[in-house]
Length: 347
Image (cartoon, rainbow, N blue to C red; front, side, top):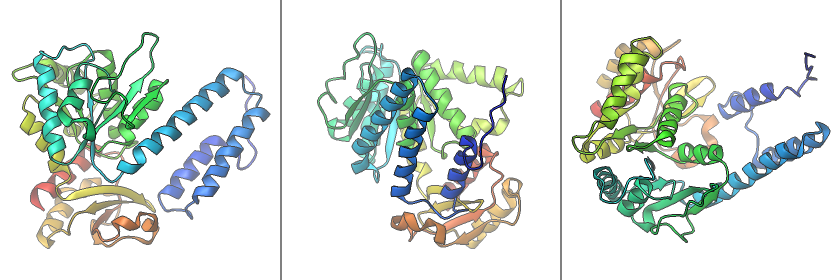
C-alpha cells in the first residue's frame, strides 16, 4: 500500500489536534468567520481529492442536518436539558411508560427541557410528562415511516434527520443529563455511547441515570453484566461505576440530575488545565479536603480557586462564576465525577 504523504499544514489529524488546542486556549482562538472559511476550503478539497458522489452527498446531508438542528436548539442553549432514551415499542399502559412520564414531569417542573427521539413508547412518555412547551424532538427518518408523537408533532422544536450519527451527536451535545429507560438495541447503543464518550473525556461529565420501573430488573440485570463481566475481567475500572446510577425511584432519578448542578456549573480546558466553574466559591476547609482526597488525579501542582481566566473571554456570560482549576490527568473520569459529587455534597 502506498504511504500517503501530507505537505506541511495538510495533515487532517494534525489540524483536528490544533483546533482542539485552540479551543483549550493554548493558541489564539479562531474567529467564527475564519472557521466558516475553513469549512468552505475543506469542501473545495473534495473536488481536488476526486471524492465520489456518494461521499459528498453524505457530507452535504450531514452538514445541512447539523446546521439546521443547531439553529433550532440555539434559543434554548441557556436552559438545562435532559435526553430521555427508551423503547419505542412499550405501550402507554406499561409501568416503564408511566415511570418515564413521572420522571419527565418532575424534571420539567425543576426547570429542565426534555429531548427525545420524538417517536412512540418511552419517547412519547418523555414528552407527555414534560408537555409540549418543554419538549424537543429529534426524529429519525426510517425506511418504515416513524411518525412523531402527538405531543411534539408540528412543533418548531421537532427535527427530522436522515442519519443516526448526527442524531446521536445532538442527543449528547445538547444535553445536560441523560435518563435511560428499558429499551432494545437502540437504547443499549445510545447508553453505551454516552458512557464511552464520558469515560474517555470526549464529552463533558453529565449525570447518567438508568431508570427501572418500580421493582423492575431491566437495568439491575444490565448492572450485573457490567460488574460480573466487564469489571471482573478488567475491561473497565472500578471508578467507572461512578459515571452512572441505576434506580427504580423517580425521585432518586430526578435528584441525581438536579444535585449534579447544585454547586457545579460546567467545565472547560484552558492551557492544559481543567477549569470547573462553580455556582459559588468553596470554603477553605473543603478546598483542603479536596487537595488531600483527590491528589491522585492531579499531574502537577494542586487545586486552586481562581476567577475567570483570560482565555475564557468568549464565555463572558459565565465570567462572574468562581473556578476550581487544576492539572487533570485526563483519564480518571470516574474519580472526576467523585470530585464533583463531593463539591455538590459538601459545598
